[in-house]
Length: 224
Image 1: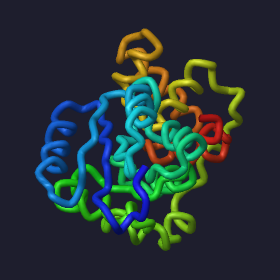
Image 2: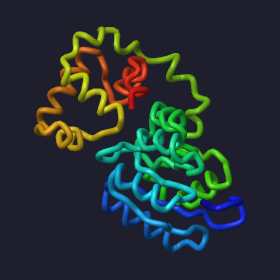
Image 3: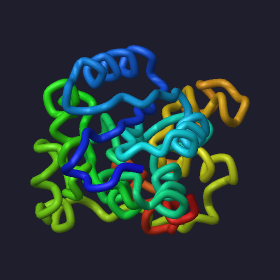
Image 4: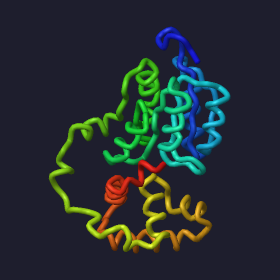
């Protein structure tokens, strides 16, 4: 690990399972004189191994990865390597995901769509001990309108869900895509869509954000 944060360049690891995103952002980081690029990984477990091996200052982690998702990985790092500052990279613009990341121990939350413009700034902010929240998301930290408006969700008790419906909804809340869940459960994407749709209908959940909020009330997110 480096000593005083301001005295040297941050050593950065990047983890993302989307090849195009990984290639683009790694090129951006490599081209900068402000950071030292240590390495990259395409899965959560590979990222954990790389971080253990190299001891970077900052880990830029995709929120949704196979084997070990970004939130779970952040929790592991907070416990095992508290000096590694985690910057979550996500396409989710819902406040619930932001809260999940910060509660897990992340020091920053950057959206993929604005990463080309803001990633280096975000890395620098978390490296010196600051908290970085994507400008698009910053207002959500103080916006209480979502709490006042909207319908009540999850009024049907959990035991009305089948085991598979609950499992699929939980993985969806953790940021996994239908394809990733299908691969993990060894079933077809169509089957996952059926389980998700059936479970969401039982609970009156209309969107992914609703599913995440329901998962939070059930304590599913704390089980990572």
